[in-house]
Image 1 (tube, rainbow, N blue to C red):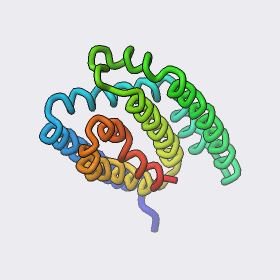
Image 2 (image 1 turned 135 degrees about the vertical axis):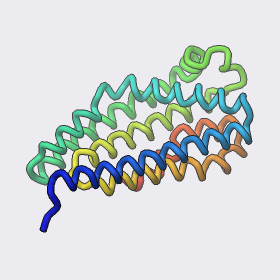
Image 3 (image 1 turned 180 degrees about the vertical axis):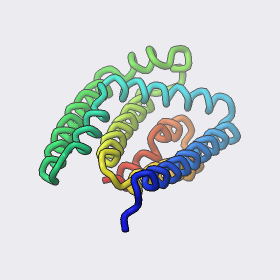
Amino acid sequence: MTAAPKDRLLSSFSILSSTTLLAIVFSVMTNKAIALLAGPEGIALMGLYRTMGAFVSGTITMGFATIVVQGVSKARSQSEIDSVLGAASLLFLIQLGLVSAVAIAAAEPLGRWLLGSAFTGVTDGEVRIVLAMALVNLLLGLVTAALNGQSDIRPITAVYLATSVSSFLLIFPLLAFGRTGLAVNVASGGIVGACLGL
C-alpha cells in the first residue's frame, strides 16, 4: 500500500529539514574552525572569498537552476530528462569558458575590485582558485537542480549532507595552506557533493 500524499509530504519535510539542520550545524562548525585556527583575518578573508565566488556564479547563472528543476520535473520520459540535462551541460560549458577567460585575462582587476583593501597580499593565483571554485559551485548547482526535479528526495539529501560534512572535514588540512587553502575551501565540499550527485 502506498503512502498518502500527506504522509509523503510530512516524511519528505522531516528528512529535508533534518538534513538542512545538520548542514547548518556543520557550516557553523567549519566557520568556528576557521576562527580558531586562522583568527579574525582568516574569517574575514574567507568571507570575502565566498562573496567573490557567489558574485561570479550568481552573475552567470541567470536562474538556470530553476529552469533545470522545472524541465526535469515536467519531463515525461528519460529522453526528455536527457535533453534538459544536455542543454544544461552545454550552458555549463559556456559558463566554464567565460569564467576561464576572466581568470586568465582579468584575475587581478577583479580581485582588486571585489576584495578592495583586503586584496593586499592576495595573489592572482588565489583569485583564480576562487574562480575555479565558483565553477565547482555552478556544477553543484546544476546537479542539485537536476536532483530537485525528481520525486525521490534521498539523493538530494545525501548530496547536501556530503557537501557540508566534507567541507568541515577538509578545512583542517586546507588551513595548513593559508590563503590558498581558504580559497579552495570556497567549494571544497562542493567538489565532493558534485561528484556524489553526478
